[in-house]
Image (cartoon, rainbow, N blue to C red; front, side):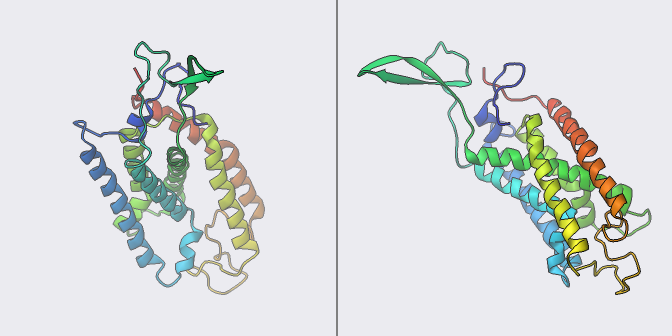
Length: 276
């Protein structure tokens, strides 16, 4: 899942990938871009919270759109912290070098130094968290963007910048940061992180519909006979449980794997940073 070696046998340059410079070999430019993306995302999400959820703050955490935004903010923060901490060295202790994915250490046997032994290079915890958050937030944002523009938005509806940004803009900034700046490779096993998000939200949607009286204060009319208390009309476990179950199966068994392959293919368009 966190292998630094591609199927081609080339080895990812950990420092250049997780603590990159953006242009002109300047860390200052990289930091300026990353801080701007983080500040813009937090500002827009905060504005959207104030504009829509001021009267129902707890409902903010009920929508998949906001889950995606919070995951993305979490990634931006962890990746930004990674620019300052956990910097690694890719230099070998032996000039003529074995494969660059290895670090050489001297092993002492019976008090005498043995031959140099190769130890695989590993990512630190901060880098692993950043990689997992990037993969899961990117796919979540793709799903959020597609579902909003295909199923929620009605042509002619008034749109605010904050709505456009959290239903597409965040996705663009993730691509800029994750593929444009960091050049992350995508591993197929990382799909488990997206499945974790999917299962957690699926459980929440069932609890919201069947085990609480929260409803949807933005549309409900307190009439139990009407179909207006679900967070999403297409995911209503009270009124249309079979349709909701079919939709969830399609998303889990078809949509998420296809999107993961799409993200993998997208990552291939951006040249990765390898050790020489």
